[in-house]
Length: 593
Image (tube, rainbow, N blue to C red; front, side):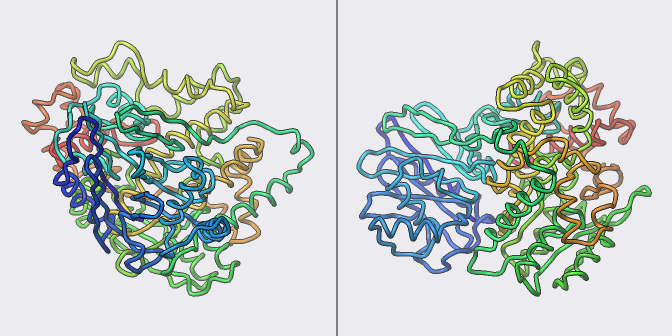
């Protein structure tokens, strides 16, 4: 797990190694264990390393293979790298390290761009071919690892975070009006390739882009799950599905133990993380390090779920760490969390993950986490109503449950220069949910959430906050084999038992029932859900600043109405609308946009 960056020139100029060095400096938190750079005329790479596999210098990056004429920078972890190494050795390849990075290099030489279909893991990588000058960029299937792009005439820059590209300079930082619409509609989700600023884009998940020396590019999507039923599963019972998914989940958890250092678990006390702990225990893991976080209660809302995580820690005799954070610590941590965001994210548990990652990173460097289970196994409240409607009604029902505001309301929020005649957010969801490959309305919603919402909310949140402290977070529920199997599973089995029915049935064989039958919880961060005190002051100052007025994103009268009643307007997902506006302005100011 690391941070990568680089520049490719197409105008005959040499790559700007100084700009690449500035990007590397911005990525230091993602890779506290080492730094490297490489350049060859018009191409330059930079890298920061978090040492997890092959802790020696032979695993350093950028990795150059002079024999093959290839150079790579890589962020992520390939869980099947040992098996792939053995296969490639059988084809005659000789290895100089024990790293997964070198497996990608050799694999690319052997399979070309199809190397991505051989990789089990999370990854973003860039490879340069010495003999052709070609550069190849790739991102993993579920978008777990980020890859941002800044393209101008004659130049392409790339980095693991958007702020790193800003640090390099010469970026169009004007706000993208369509992205702003997505942000304000879709709970801050801005689908790839857009970002909130016009000058930066992101490579979509499951995508390979090939860049030729003259700047021409081509890209293709190499993977997508199918959300339809197959004839070979027609005779499967509910138990058959449970057994198959349980085995796939066991494999996913086992794969994510690959490391040359210990692997712990972020234990929220919910079904998903508890199930990971239980399965690891059944794999023979003893003394497993687990971590839970809690906050002070605010406005009568409880701020921790320790009673549930304690049950799991006691049942499986883990080395458990309770982390309690006072409200004043939360306000103080906001600045760091916002600075660590590659893009603005409004979810309340962003700060929780930042604080949790800070504390966890002091004792361990790799953890497994439960993100993705709700999107893959239908754990959210908006899925059951979709089972009652046909495909033609699905988009409206989905938007009603999930969108923070509709297009008509948008005109009351944004300034005139950002007002759009059409509704790009609803159009995007309609196009995605109407595409072939999803059998029912529930299937279509699960697909859009897994391919889009999950990538640009929960997954990005975990990557950004954990890597800000040099902590690698692995997400077994997003193992692509498990996701493919879950997509084929009949929706009614996932919707059963109040949602995540298949997982709950598996859980009843592994973990205590009180953790399964509890009310659904979220990472509770009451001080942000209910704005008051220092947090409210931060938001008020940001939205009232000269920078905000000059930017003109929001109508002044709308902002004043929200400030007059800070907790009066909530989204359908119970998010604070004032926080949504304030967070965006705080992010823009934090990153000098």
